Image 1 (cartoon, rainbow, N blue to C red):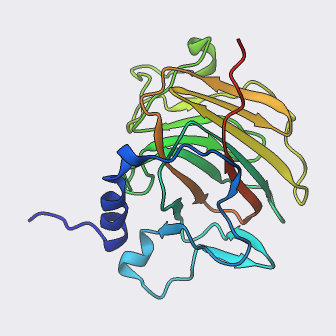
Image 2 (image 1 turned 30 degrees about the vertical axis):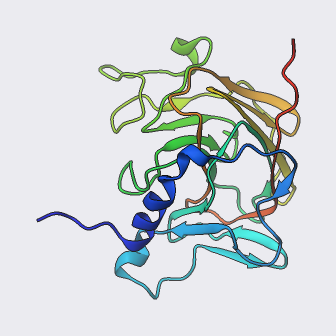
Length: 236
């Protein structure tokens, strides 16, 4: 018997059919309006079988809050390419795990949870790592920064070496303090800064457009700003 996709997943797939109409920002625009989750769609697998499960993403005191559980993702309704994304976030209490996903497309592509994408890690003390999720990206010094166990290959599927280590330690602020994450997606390249430090730079990415997603992955995280805008002029 063929398995039917949940309504939310089908909706996201139908929206993805307009990927050839991806938006390239011409001005800075807030993706979060400070009042509600307009422009976003939540995909939380647990709610397929437990509709009464609490919301994973809420607005509280003007902040977008990922409660961490049930685990899932909050995805923009629109598809973007060639942009600068600026996010201000903090672990309000205990530091933990979260992520910002770029170039997200097929929902639940990995482990029936994670949308096809490149994750920019926010996990405490690992902010700026890349995780490849059914997509791939290269970095300089692959053997060192993308370690492989015996039999693993570089890729984005189960069993692959999917993690790309960041370039710095100590770029994050303590729990309760605000961090600034900047992601520049330029053609097939992705560059990441945390609090002004260059923490990752990848090239030859297998995708150049998609949605932006925030994770609920076990820890409460507050977002006070999620802005998207044009790329600065490339250096000559």
